[in-house]
Amino acid sequence: MVGTVGLYEPDTYMEARPTYPLEWYSKLAALTPHHNLAWDVGTGNGQAAIGVSEHYKQVIATDVNMAQLERATPHPRVRYLPTPQTMNDNELVSLIGGENSVDLITVATAVHWFDLSHFYFIVSRVLRKPGGVLAVWSYFDMAVSPEFDSLFKKFHDSLLPFWPKEVTDYVHEGYKTLSFPFESVGLGSEGNPLPLEIHKQLSLNGILKLFRSFSPVNVAKSQGLDLLSPEVVKGFENAWDGPLTLVRDVTYKAFMLAGKVRS
Image (cartoon, rainbow, N blue to C red; front, side):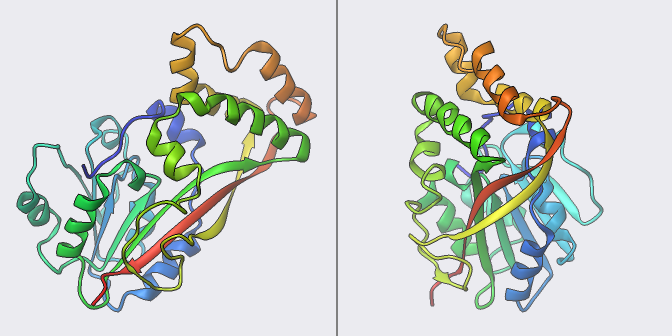
């Protein structure tokens, strides 16, 4: 499968998801000698696709999740295309641009959902050789203050039984356990992802809205367990030490793997 699975309510996800730093795209673009075509896989709301489009003439942005694509931000150099699971490999390769055609492939916070061996096979077909680069990244923990961070860890631990296996196996491990059989280009390598940070200004209201959109919170609630009980929320309010609308700098802990097809 080459697409994403909904773990968040799309509208809330778009509001609270961290914004990937522009310098990430600049660094990746500097690694590819050609800048004609990029493919953003599991594009979601299109954030990464639009960032990549500043450096490439055209970006093909694909997803299996139509709810996300319908909310994606339009851009003149980005083509949003659905990739239903009924699409065969040759159809997918043709849709993207053909064999040996893509200069950069990006997967932002999605590759852990994919059938990795199948995805990497498609990558090996469409990525330009030599010179093409595949980059995958995600994020997980957030840091605000020692008191808030301690409460967040307890909250995070309470979610563990309700997260899908793909999240606990790969994202919670910072992609250290993710198979990535590509030659390193200096931005992380298999078993040794590049640690990164993403800064975002958020209010506690925004953070709590994000927490309430988490799939594990809603799965647990359907089973009669309130992981965001009034007591838990009160703890976060006390740790915020200010009005719920007060905006603070939130640091998301991110990680990246980038590489090229081995010769």
